[in-house]
Picture 1 (cartoon, helix red, strand yellow):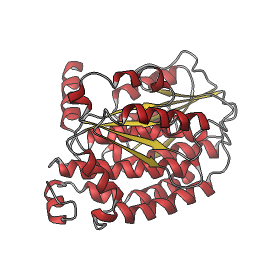
Picture 2: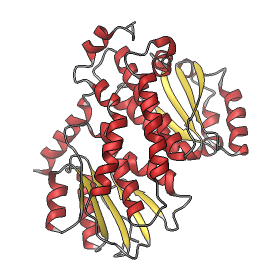
Picture 3: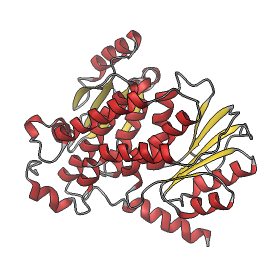
Picture 4: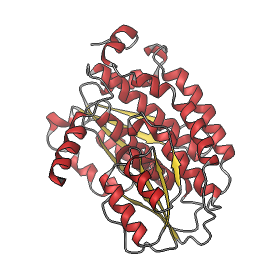
Length: 354
């Protein structure tokens, strides 16, 4: 097995330097806030609902946004991951069209439909066809730096959303929460980075436990976006299947599945993401569920969020998961950056469109 404290071995597989992008994430978030604050935005007055359109690494920011602001928003916020937008979209709908490359076909299709509905649109992209269409339609664009894998641009994509809602007066000022998040991310960077030894590096130790096992991520409702991020990062960076689900819904079906196929179950490693603000009933469900599953699975870990604000607590677990997925890729002797299956799919889809 690879020694995660041997930088030479790590560099052998991390050919495109994903470690640098992970280490840069706290600074990326700081830059993202400045970009969003300086972006030119119309003074949209009446907004009855919000629709966030984005796929994959470009779309996870919408999931995080919903969790962070839904308790204070007085209007619905809907996540859309499809070619088509809901019928309710109208001139009073704020639509975020998010595509890092600017060429995501589902997002472009949804954007065109939003234009036809005369919705209030804000595009977030590095360029591509989305930027061109937005310029033609006189739609405001928050332009973010290019050259990253979409999943490594979460800071730019998420904070563009959050700060825009703040500037439009839809949520309260988030300066305090953002500052707390940046401080914790900088601290976690030191704890999770390459130079931090395995003995004191939580991300490395979790990756070692997940090695050669199937990760199952369970979360409380408030941490659902963190579970989705873990699942996505383990798939794209580590190149392993991973699954996520949320309490209490999983108690109504999935816990029964931990019964048959013992050979597979013994290769499943369960990680439960927990938050100090989880309700007493959710905490009790987690406790009972862990008793049901612990003897069936390969192992079980409880991971707890850190920080005061929900924004900080979510990103504490998201950043941990990003590093875990990186170290698991190294253990799997694979470069975390390329996503060959996605690239192949896009090439094949492009052929069929000709």
